[in-house]
Length: 305
Image (cartoon, rainbow, N blue to C red; front, side):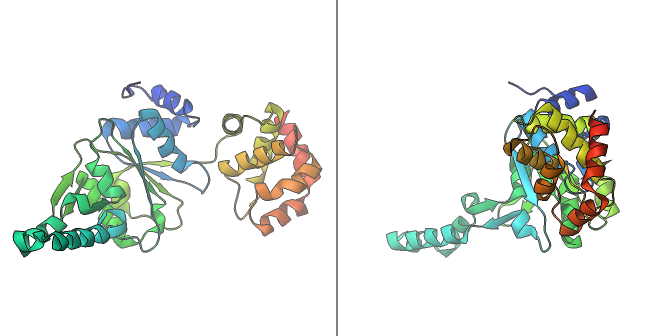
């Protein structure tokens, strides 16, 4: 099926929903504008709220190739843009020597052959701008706050005109700009220059009804009653000041774990037994136990009806 560019915000929401991603009106609007204006979309929010999943759902909806650049401290151009396949270059040299061709073509010609595009290893940024498919790829630059300031400045240069220069070959420029999603967990402030290049949206934890929809979509073996109660429990857990509040992924994991144990609704015993599926820090589990599982369950039953 051929993808048609959305003309309204509702089309974006529907397209993502078809891929199992339930976007808020604000996120749908931000994504619609990013697609219409061909601007990167900068998504910031707590870990686990579904920022990375936006890019995955967008790629599945549009049919664009998903290209992911996972950022980390020490990331540099050779890992993010390109590098040369030295092993294949060496094999090329040895083959030329073994066949006697090296003596015939001359040193300069042989050197030029070593820097042919067939020996070029395209990393995510170069792959995104050199992509020749009809549908623009989706470039996910994940957790940019983990990268160094120097890489952030380089990234700004690449995104300004969607081009990369390889000195030995020349300039690669995207015929059609990729759809760029940049995420940050806000472990540090990202420079204003990069944010100015992008449209911005803060991604919050989903609301109660939205989380129920996510759980039932991603975990079809979970009963409706259990999905309601898990969503209600996670909502309560996020409000008690935990060190690491559970994200959407933890909600799904918890619901699936409970269903696998044959549970159709939450009980004090099942919460005690499976708390490690939703809370990954001992201190957070101790806090919940100190506040009381019976009290948590009572709030859940009241909220879930």
